Image (cartoon, rainbow, N blue to C red; front, side, top):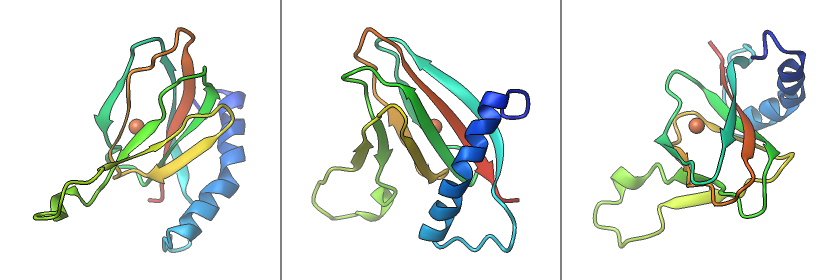
Length: 135
Ligand SMILES: [Fe+2]
């Protein structure tokens, strides 16, 4: 969408500084290359629609920009990536939820599994998601 729509191209441009800051925070060595947006799409979630557990294969960085978030909307839930290392550890909460808020941007490494629980509100939850690669 970012290649055919000025609106989504503006989103891409406005995310650039945040992406650089994210890459620095996680100490990526990009070997002088830029992160490039490869795909971008709109998510419209009516009541009771969920987005099942998944990751974004073949991408480096993923994110979501929240456009419309009715009161009570589900956040995005990230699964603890250490689950297969716990072995004999006592049970613990394996999830971290980042609340959805209109105008907020959430960035995460694409290998991190995540989901959005069923949307409980009558009004639609609207967001724009995207992937970036560095190769
Ligand atoms: Fe996703």
